[in-house]
Amino acid sequence: MENSPLFNAGKGAVFTNQGTIEHDASIMSGENLNAGASTGTMYVKNPITLAHSIMTNSEHVFLSREGAEEFAKMVNLEIVEQDYFYTDFRFNQLKKQKNSPSKFGTVGCVAMDINGNLAAGTSTGGMTNKKWGRIGDSPIIGAGTYANNKTCAISCTGSGEYFMRSVVAYDISALMEYKGLSLKEAVFKVIHKKLPSIGGDGGLIAIDNKGNIVMDFNTPGMYRASINKDGEKNIAIYLE
Ligand code: ASP
Image 1 (tube, protein in one colour):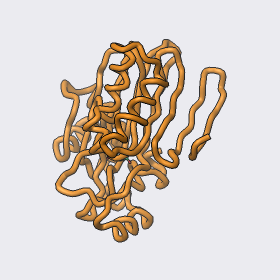
Image 2 (image 1 turned 135 degrees about the horizontal axis):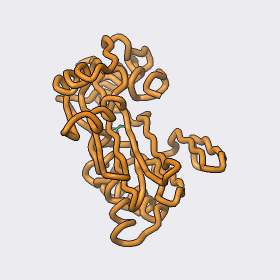
Image 3 (image 1 turned 60 degrees about the vertical axis):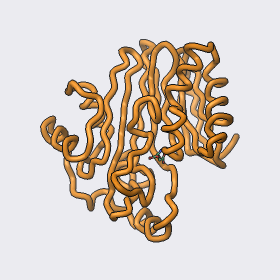
Image 4 (image 1 turned 90 degrees about the horizontal axis):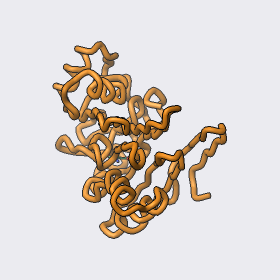
């Protein structure tokens, strides 16, 4: 999905106020709470691969900008020019929305493997017109991404400033772990009560440790798809 120009991640990601494209990504394993994340990279072709590499090949969790690029080169990830990420669609968005950041289009993934281990990943260009090295929720473990085999795996999309302040992904896991809520109840509480109470809009995809899938949002729509262990697919944009 990072290689498709249709999403706000990798190729086709949104532009910053400076006319650059700067990616954020994160990944987490629910089995051992290992995680990796990167922010502000401009030349790594696949930021989610960088996040995965940070998780598996470094002693750190979160790397930024030039340092993250240096690490990417060290582990031989594919490096490209900024031009590779360019799309007319996103450039026109920047021109039109110079003063009002647009939202969403981020790519997220949650999964349970054959052994019942959960994982979550999120990759984004962030918000159109972002300034001053702005970092959103997507690369922040606990805000935009979280996975824990005890509870669930979550990947968020939406107005990152509010998702960070609500610590959305971890909050859902905590509501399940400490309060005994189901995934559906916990997601409902955070997406339809807590987040809107401070003005946040967006949604998330989630899977719990029994394989229940929840994809919920407080916006008119959210591109989403799922497949369960029986091969049943669900693809939707608006409310069903
Ligand atoms: N949450 C992302 C951010 O704030 C944007 C998005 O989901 O589209 O950077």
